[in-house]
Amino acid sequence: VTGTLNIESNTKLIVHPYALGIWLGDGATASGIIASGDEDLKGLIKNMQEVGYEASSIKHIEKDSGNGNIVTFPRLKKELKEAGLLGQLKRIPIEYLRASTKNRIELFQGLIDTDGSIDKDAGRVWYGVGPNRKLIEDVQELYNTLGVKTSLSDSIAAAYVDGVRGVDRPKTTIAAFTEFQPCKLPRKLANWTPGSEYSQGTRHISRCITDI
Image 1 (tube, rainbow, N blue to C red):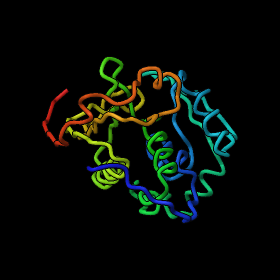
Image 2: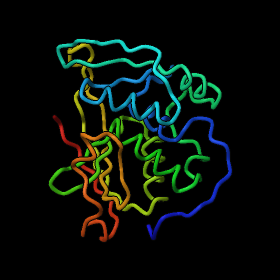
Image 3: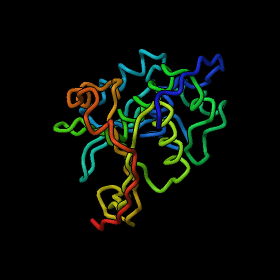
């Protein structure tokens, strides 16, 4: 990784990059519905409104494993279908990986606002991906086009359905430091500080299996 890939692309993006990142992180594969915890619900709806997506319904769900919400964005479902993404293995289309720097950062922010987290002490940005190798590769390429050095770690994560532990699944976590704002949700943004001495180091990949 030598620096940000600077592209001035005029390619029309069917789904707004931030909305695509939100769906890739917490969206249902077959529809435009998005899952959100109570603490981020207002921020999610506000951020989606700002990029042109209105929520038509919000369904609150209470489970033993924690409360949550299912949010429906009709425009998002329509655009995902038009882009040929519904009902398919989640991926980042090449036109988004070659979009303008602004658009790629917005996609990055959508990913981190859903399946990402930020280490408050070190400022490290984490993104977790389930057993979808294509999406892992796409997210890593997105990081690389933004000049972000990454490290990867593999683990076995416990999976729960309606509060009941199901079959454990492999999970890959991508860690990085960023100079640009990596997210929009206030709760996560509060933990971020630009860059780090570690971000200047050599990119490396480490892999380990941890049974939890």
